[in-house]
Length: 279
Image (cartoon, rainbow, N blue to C red; front, side, top):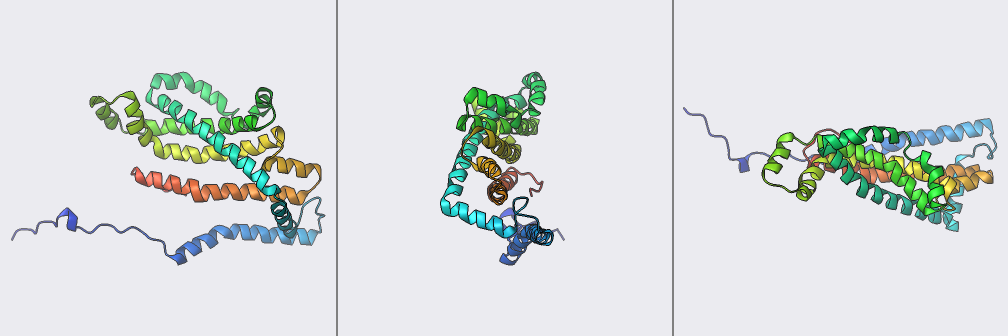
């Protein structure tokens, strides 16, 4: 007897995609929110037990009241709009400048060796350390803050882009060159797509650095934004507004990371055949 031939590829069973049930999604959401609920409970209990005055540290209800007052007065939307506008512009500038530079460094060992010491030197100074000179160059306003966001993101994006280009298999690069691929086509069709998983990871990390730089720069260099709201509340000893502004900053970044950046990174990694998990 001869062994039966394997079924055609079209008839073979394909692995099913895992689908999350509503119950599992709800469980994941509750588990994600659990530490925040615990923090709020401890916060409320400690403030109530110690009787610390609101000027030193507010109660949870005081912060909630401050959030409602900021929303009702429209102050929250003014600061939120200013901060988001600066983050978007600074992020766009960082992407436009860091990606070509990172690809060039990753593709050229000589260029990488030349700029490596300068990049290592600049990493320690990226972001907040540039605020004083940024205000001297660009004055107090959007220009200085956007520069800080760009500066904070640029090096993280560049570094991860270099790593992504260097991880592209060498046979793939040789095959593209043997087919007469030009530099521009090599950039768009080989180098950038091959580095994309690392680029998205760098965007996620860099945007976190940029957000911190934004808040610090707004405290010093502008008259609107979430960072400025912190500074203004400190001058009037409004600790409830200070904590409320901090909560808004944290929630906004958390929403951006979990709803936009993490799914983008996960899909990019899956699209290009990587198997490492993304949290």
